[in-house]
Figure 1 (tube, rainbow, N blue to C red):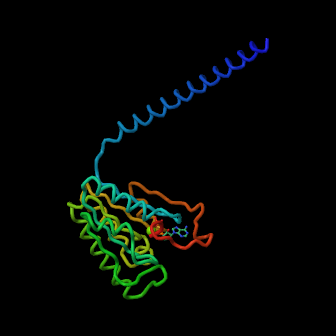
Figure 2: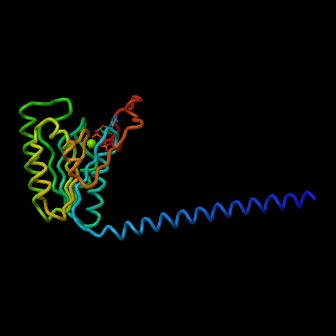
Figure 3: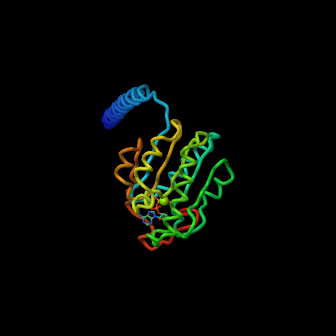
Length: 215
Ligand code: ATP
Ligand code: MG
């Protein structure tokens, strides 16, 4: 008697499991159909303007990761670093320098701490000139302008000129701008915008910037 009850129970459990599995398969089919439809609709090929902004960690690493991705396909990249951060070294650049990457780091000790000095302004101008050269060179597939948002925010680089240069860049060239507080007009102009939100940061718990993780 007990055995029969047990069999009934396990049978209905099996049935529930297979119904669940069936539902899962149906859901996946719907998702796949949706994705396939959207993939079929995306037929255009052109350079993309990407903005990675927000107060969370991961903007520069994302920018450098994308440059690495391009280089992995044998493409040519350009990188301009507008802020050196608290450390002068930058692990990703040590690697990228070994490849076909044009690179410029803004001269002077510009950090978030020193602002509005004439030397910073002049250094920003030089870095922007380098950026413009890259944004006019159709042999460069991807240009990363790391921490450029601050230059626009402080008025070191003219916003209208930035917009014009980005709009007139080679049609197949990708450009990535990273940094907090990205100007609304650049967000409007961009094709893809990601905002990295801080949920937690080890720094707030007293952990200092770690080599290999933060720089
Ligand atoms: P990463 O270079 O790690 O991708 P990021 O580019 O998103 O960071 P930045 O605003 O450029 O962030 O910050 C530069 C430095 O500050 C990095 O060492 C980064 O790890 C650290 N940092 C980023 N976000 C936070 C945060 N919310 N609190 C404290 N430190 C942060
Ligand atoms: Mg950064």
